[in-house]
Image 1 (cartoon, protein in one colour):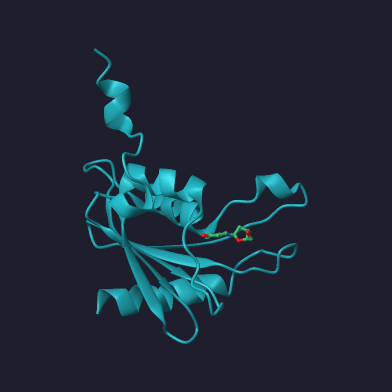
Image 2 (cartoon, rainbow, N blue to C red; image 1 turned 30 degrees about the vertical axis):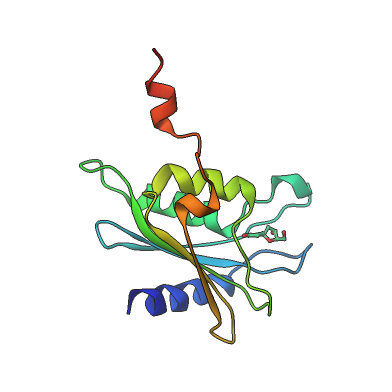
Length: 138
Ligand code: THU
């Protein structure tokens, strides 16, 4: 099914992670509403604070792949690590995820043991600041 496919793609991205400092590889894969699968991995930097998480790189890949005619929205995101404790998206990623996923969509964390945990977007970041808040100025 979709979750298993995304888990495979996220595992694939995990192998490409550039994490020489933390040695904490993360892979992500997401499905768009136009049925494209996109991938991302974390990319670290010698200037540590410039690190970009797998989830945000995955969303950026969706932006690149996206064609102008429709609004970019994702229906599912998977985060893959090889940790016994499943990896949830960090706070910065929760904000970026909120911009591109409907509230009811889900994020799944999975590991090498195929253990899984699901969260709804609204659970990850309740009452998120969204484009709606910017445009609804009056
Ligand atoms: N990281 C991610 O890519 N996604 C997460 O959900 C958690 C953290 C990365 C950032 C950094 O390269 C490494 O994991 C350790 O924090």
